[in-house]
Image (tube, rainbow, N blue to C red; front, side, top):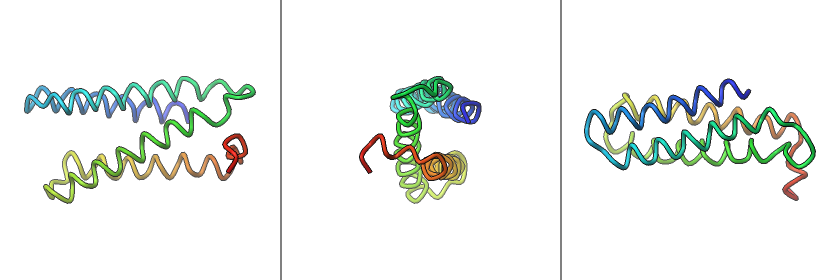
Length: 114
């Protein structure tokens, strides 16, 4: 799972940099690097499975990917362009489902009182 999270975070960060280089969008650069860094940090912490570390990297990655899914789907609906927002929407929804599946399979929600 950390490998998928690293790849997803790198794609998001590189996409933000390409958005800045292609169109000069500082927002794309900032948000891409922010979300990419959060996802890569989550992937780094996913390897540590000690007490108190079990669920929060997955919760952080789920929150980030869900935010990306919402933002990219909104932009996809506005523009109708499959590249890049449609692809990012599909990737974000898929990763959100993967992180959600982790919580249901490993029952990590007890740490959050849910």
